[in-house]
Length: 370
Image 1 (tube, helix red, strand yellow):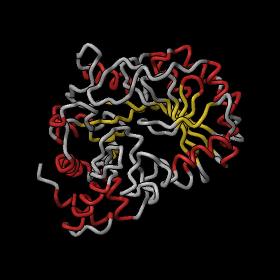
Image 2 (cartoon, one colour; image 1 turned 180 degrees about the vertical axis):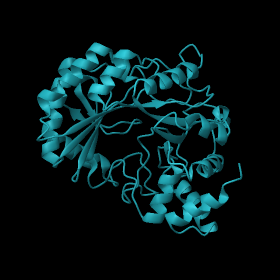
Image 3 (cartoon, helix red, strand yellow; image 1 turned 45 degrees about the vertical axis):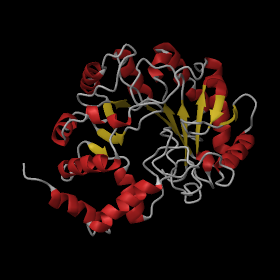
Image 4 (spheres, rainbow, N blue to C red; image 1 turned 60 degrees about the vertical axis):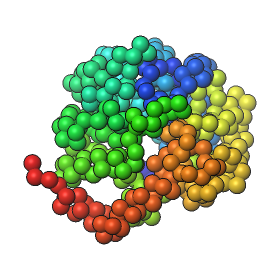
């Protein structure tokens, strides 16, 4: 559908039943969203969408673990949407990102009714970083849940966040996901404060792994694959595209809500409180957001790299501190830093790659015999 989409990150709870090694979320950071929070938010976001000129709405259920809110509470919150989003005025769609551990038959019913039979999950084949609070790996149960969802006719997209200890060979990675999920995104984990950095991939290691995967995926469209963030940065360099998280000129097109009706920037680290649905008007929040996103007044962002003024995503939605960028002003670690852009640009130039067609040909020619 043409026009602009308003994207909302809903955190109905910050509680989580896992304690993944690289996770940066404070699971006690806020209370759960209550029925009154949902009602007030739906009314507010409809008015907000009209105020900024949005013609459609995407609601991304996140966390924490959103399924911890409970089946009954989720169904109640979702059923309220019909009362507030008249499809002729504000078409909407729900997305969910879950660790999949709590998936059951009722979850599938919920997904088929409210989420177009689709769910996003998280999984690394043979991984050990995705753990329960007692330290036990959750890999085996998540693997079973993925198979269960597919057997129930649910489409599954997976985010695979790579650490050095979790790495399987590219061939094993490819074979595990092949015809098993509908989409897979590959990320590079970053060490949270105090973590052993030796357990995490550096940029050259990650890039080489991605290239090996691209060799396998180049002639195979299934599953759909996004090698975040190497390919995103590559497209930015070759096509001049932007990687916008919070634009300096139109920051208000992404917003987050959590318990108590608190409205924040879409960032997961150093979230900026913009107001709440009970007391602040759409105009108030837009003014707050624009002030926050302005590159001059944005405290803690990387002024040296000028992410905001160039409209490049700052990576703040990743929420990891201690950026790859060596600027002392920068408070984020992200793939979208000047160091990564320089690395990918040098890689493309050294291999004579100037277009996406040339990039695809390069990976095709680089494919090793089976």
